[in-house]
Length: 112
Length: 111
Image (cartoon, rainbow over the protein chains, first blue to last red):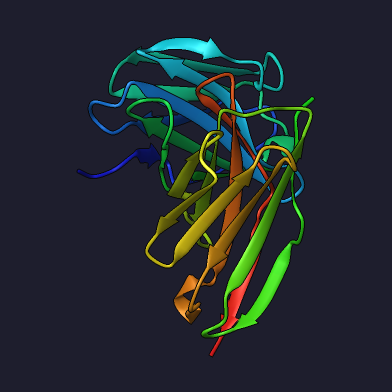
């Protein structure tokens, strides 16, 4: 199995632009999680899905952030408009049962 | 709100010694706790899960304890090796599925 796949691996954009991060979970995993990691705040859960349905989005910082999971093999995290404080590494993780989580390699986002 | 603290940001030990990392939490009673390893530039990798009714769990050179009275978990690596150098993250279960992560302890093992 290829593991969790994220794209792009690196993204540099200018403030105000729309950013879309993509994730393909491990096949057969029912749970998908989006995290953000910074030095200051550590690894923070943004939102998670169970069987493609958003369960808890309380970690989404504000309305500029949105996430979708149109099917079991694909999810997106969108930031519109982006701001410099959104610069971070964004991780996607999937889980078969909601306990042990398998993380992707992350997307390093830089907003200038 | 739930708070999780890993008591040291960095730990330096010599090869062959036992590394002990601490995770403390407040304002919560998690059903389970997990430990992950993260190498620079990579995503966290799951190591161990311990449930609230388990006192101790082992996997090869790793051992985790979970004291729900003290609200503390200890993570031990015995006979440490330079390859064990990484950041180790403690994570608490939140509402059955989600995890709250500590900021991690960076372990450096010197030969």
